[in-house]
Length: 228
Image (cartoon, rainbow, N blue to C red; front, side, top):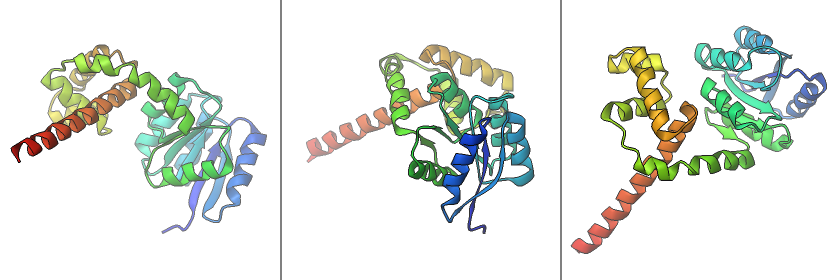
């Protein structure tokens, strides 16, 4: 087992890229294997070197989200962590939906960046806490609407599979239906939730399911006391 967390850094600003590399080199368990400056170079580094973590900017030459999707689906052992100045919710949603395991802003401190990298390498998810609060605040506005949503059995069946990280193709194979049918039901679910994408729909429903579970737990506790 490699004692190092091997890291690729891809950003089209060489000075910033080298600054990040120097910060990481000070940690004995981190090893910067290569650097690049575009989406194509990110894909190339991932293919050739298979680093444990790829640090990638959102805004750089090439189709960044396509590169993230390729790496996350074709090279699942390579975890993608976005390191960017972009506080755009659409950028964050697009990156996470493409398969990125984390999203951190460039104002992050050295120790926090190291923490994020170590978390991502373990298969966890990491989002800059302040930015995560901003994203969650927008999910909360859907909660009242979600309570009123009555999903069909098939819609709930499909969104539950999607919430487990399955692609449309994998859901179709598991449920023995066509990929086109999965896309149709996902569109229906997102329309009912007023969600802009899969990530937002899944997150809103997860919060709803968690709340339902807590409500059932509280009801069960009350009933047990009444029985006594």
